[in-house]
Image 1 (cartoon, rainbow, N blue to C red):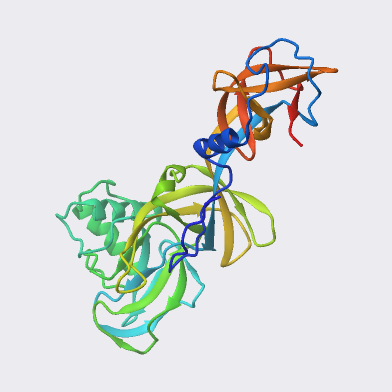
Image 2 (cartoon, one colour; image 1 turned 45 degrees about the horizontal axis):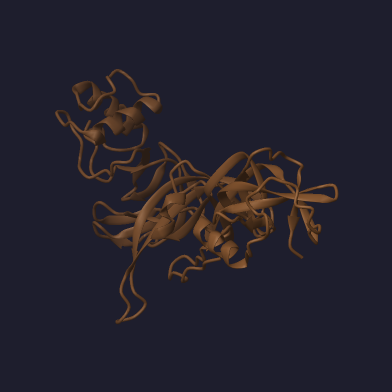
Length: 355
């Protein structure tokens, strides 16, 4: 079992739930003593083993367990794009969806629209780009028409914008001014307010912070465990009440964690976002990633392996009052068990075990 050092932002402790093959093999080799006849399939007539176990068939998984923090994911900041007086802010914890104002300056709304490209300029006839395409997709989704949804801002787009501006109490210019829209990937949850109503603000000043609306578990992993954190991978999450729920990795990023002191170097870590459905708010949770999986394989306890004369492994098959050693090839080691294949071995057979 391996535990990583705790990080500053997100507490994490990564440990191998099931030992790696090399570690398990070394442990087995140290514990095994070559037995007479090992490597043969003939009746040994030897004394029966002190304990036994069954060969089972099923799924064997090697897992990496990590501490995670349940919340709403990364926090982002909404800043004023022009100077003015803050005339309205949503309440902390409120949800804002497409077409609704995220805040108001001089009573002009900054309307939330969906998209991944930030609103970085005014948009007008003749403009082209991804931001224009996002704008037109949103206008269409809000019920405005008469234009083609593409990346070109045409006179028809301007007509639809004028109608949209009229509906939102904005000057009907046909030009989407900088600060009239805010793009986010979906509905947002207001996390905290960093300004107050009736306050004078300048361009670039923070007004509020927001997150997504879906519950997300943030997990930090050592770079050595990067292979288990793949976008789309299924994981198991244990909640504070002990209940286990399934989650899916939605985002993986490499982050640089600053050193904790002058003499401490920054470290590189893997940060994974895992989407789950739960009624819990912010909480510490355990996340289990699958490092390796073998389905429909025969397994025995690792302790059932014995050293064969040729340097490999065998199992001692118990049949009535007799035993025989069957050479095996080992596969995945996980959870104290090992995958085996060997001539004549089937599910339900009995194998010898040490005390």
